[in-house]
Length: 374
Image (cartoon, rainbow, N blue to C red; front, side, top):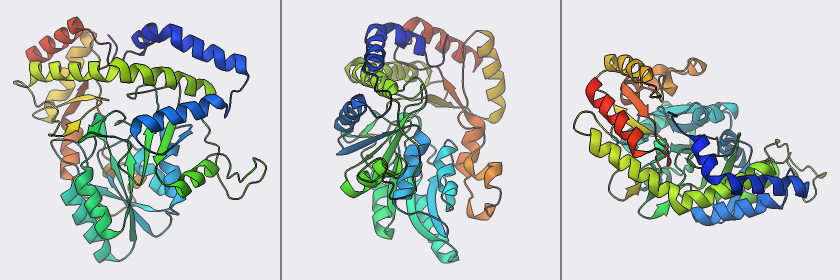
């Protein structure tokens, strides 16, 4: 059994994927070819944003907007503590300071109440200037952007949506990657829509920011590729990956997103009476990058993982060390970054296999064993 079965997906999409790859090889346009622009247009249309800029990783898709906004030394950027390292790493890469915000115990996403508290705390300290918020759509569920946007507007902060796990999710009918002033997603293979390597994309409605992102992600190019008008980076998405993503986006829209929601609903129906299952608030829609349970206490997790592993049922733990406790951020004042909910979740969450091709037979087996062990 696979945690995220990319082999089954490839078997289902093999003719289309193989043809897409062969067409790129035949075209001899491996970098910045026409397939890139076609892919960007399709993804922008799906999200409902004016611009999509494909780049070579989800990390770069987060980093480039911070460069566009000139985030740097002396600036504070607010980011949830319960997330992948890249969400905070890009802040430090720019020389700015991450301020870690606790998360909501029900949704795993940034807690607007603690966000407000941390902004006020930062302003009162007077050492760093609040500049931006990075709100993460964790495990497929969009963050509470109604509340977060109101806070961002109140304090004049830029809002960057980290939709690396959220692509395909929605809030009140509006799709993830469309909530930030700029938004980013990842095409890492295990993401809701993934390529066969690293990849990412930036979304925005702002023409100037899109133009700057285009420049930065190709060595700071100007009107000509040999006219470099700023210091940039090499963050181009390969044409073969773009071709694969175009095929996968169609399957995602046609049936994968619907199927994975059906699987998540079955998990909840089969397990909610024995363990705390994920919550999707009214008006929200998840793309289920992960299906994550909350155990009663930390002592349950290791035995459960070992017992399921012995039955060839894989599990995963996201994230055993929250951001405010990462060694790389030990230079920060821990009193400024208290996140008790993130601390608890890091010890009690466990994620079960989920993907659009998970059979009901396998899912029933997983649920039967989880129920028995708990």
